[in-house]
Image (cartoon, rainbow, N blue to C red; front, side, top):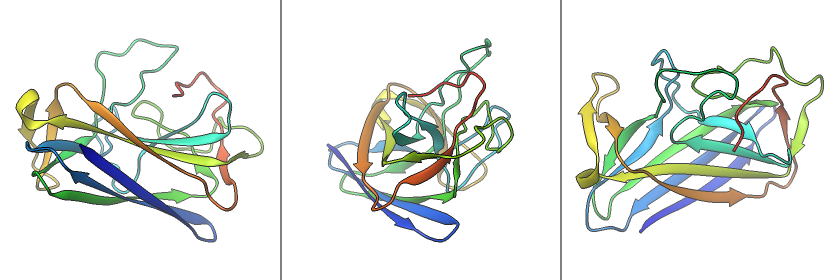
Length: 179
């Protein structure tokens, strides 16, 4: 089993979601860790972000980016992954500027094209995709070290947090894939 835990720490104009994933399987795992955009730019200490369909939860994703809803694209984008040995762990953090911005690999984080007022999110769901090393194909990347481009069957693991105060989120007004 892969055990995911997280904690939310608010600041003044920002917040941090710190997470820890422990590999309880007998086989190594690849754990999505570093989001990419469609131009393969790296976005450390972030996660794809979208409000839930009911606008009440901020969903953070370290996994395959949702595809655009209003255009065709040639390929899907997955974050770079780290290898986690049996019994090992991965730690990371997602830093949020507040109000948080919705974004994914095809729509970079920007306040342009968002609602005039931020919406309150009462929960935060952090989802992390993992793939057994034996089931995936992988290529090491030059930078950062110890990261891999991984293709294979992913399993999504999610932890839900309920902050003491709602998290303000700028909602995109154009068609945007939410999960």
